[in-house]
Length: 155
Image 1: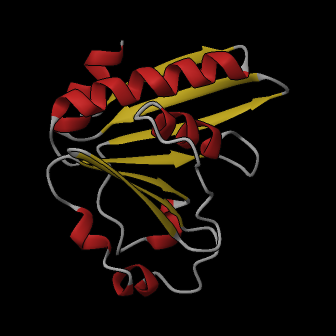
Image 2: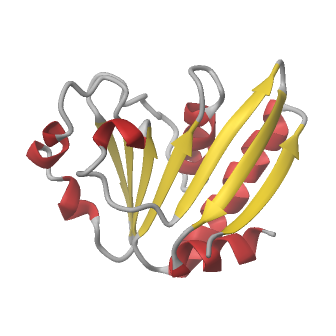
Image 3: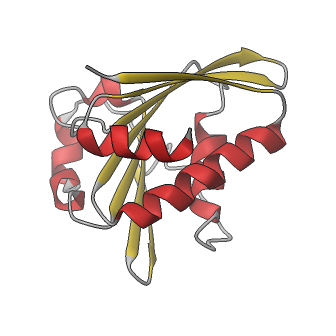
């Protein structure tokens, strides 16, 4: 059974702090982690991904909307930010080698994972984002053992 946590964030600064905390704990797990970022357009998926990635010292974060994936390598961490919004066929992910990213110390942040159904790896953590103005509600579920470990660390 998946663990579910609801988090209410009242500002972009709180969203950034959440993403930084998540990144810190993900780094310390030293394993492959797949995180789905779900929500409507403009909900804050890319904001969470950007702040997560910046936690590792990367300054220039590009949206993968047109390239499908942007990769960030730093010492012993590899982060791959996927945006499946513009996929015309899930097989496109196979062509860019999505399965090669399933190694220890590799973190995959995947936006619009449902559009890559059948090809994207199963999620360890699913963050569904909703809200209006500056307030965001995160509904976080952890369907895997790795996800449950990570969720326990951020509670």
